[in-house]
Amino acid sequence: MNNLKNYISEYIKYCEYRKRLDSKTLKAYKIDLKQFEIFCTDLSDCFAKCVVDDFITNLHKQYKPKTVKRKIASLKAFFHYMEYKELLNENPFTKLDIRFREAKLLPKTIPFHTIQTFLSTLYVQKEMAESEYQLRCCIRDIAVIELLFATGMRISELCSLKPLDIDFESSNILIYGKGAKERIIQLGNQEVISALILYQETFKKDIEICGYFFVNRLQHKLSDQSVRFMINHYAKLAGIRQHITPHMFRHSFATLLLEQDVDIRYIQRMLGHSSISTTEIYTHVSNTKQKDILVNKHPRNQMNANKG
Image (cartoon, rainbow, N blue to C red):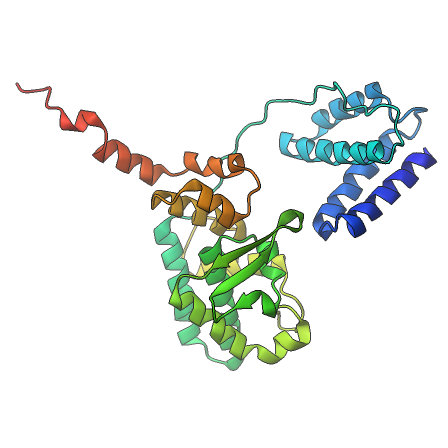
């Protein structure tokens, strides 16, 4: 048992310093592997195939498929490391059937007109600002939402942006995504660029102190939770009943581009998906495009069968 605890500790260090995984991934690995460690408390052989099989069955009893999938992936990666270090006689995942049916949840999007209303409300609040503090908040909040929708970046990616990641001369943004993967997104709208430049000029000193591009009132890095709170605030002001999350701007970015006939492989690269199958889920969401095709392109619409 102590051996397992030590192996997990060494693996977490390996993930942090050798693989350079981000803090959220490391936190998930720690939680998932600690759970396996606890499961193995009174067992003599933690690496037996039957033990791992029982653990996975136990996971299915407790969690939803998406969570189970993550926890299995964490454990599988750990055993792959053990195999790589030649600490196992046999990897318990060898010939272990871990496949299961997982319900496909369609991503929730924000309708185009709702995004328009949301953005308009932001700019109206900026014009109505009664104090310098309110104005500064509006300038920052506009920059955040404009950038989320303009690039489809994850909220964690936006909050982690550094000042040098944005090149206003070339209108490029360097994004550090999942798995330490980098991608460059071009800013193609002048209003978005202007909103970012105004924010940078307004918060120049705060940005220098903080070291991150987006800052809060305490001159600290802007948090995911602050952005969620901010979105709820403006949605309420705009009279929008739909619950909007930061990630929904990413879903809307992908769906609206698909509806404009943008090739899905371009969208895949812009979103930073390693697999096209991850991006393909958006093809099931694009109802507007589907309606346009069936109304204007279906051959039945060129037929006149009822002549009576």
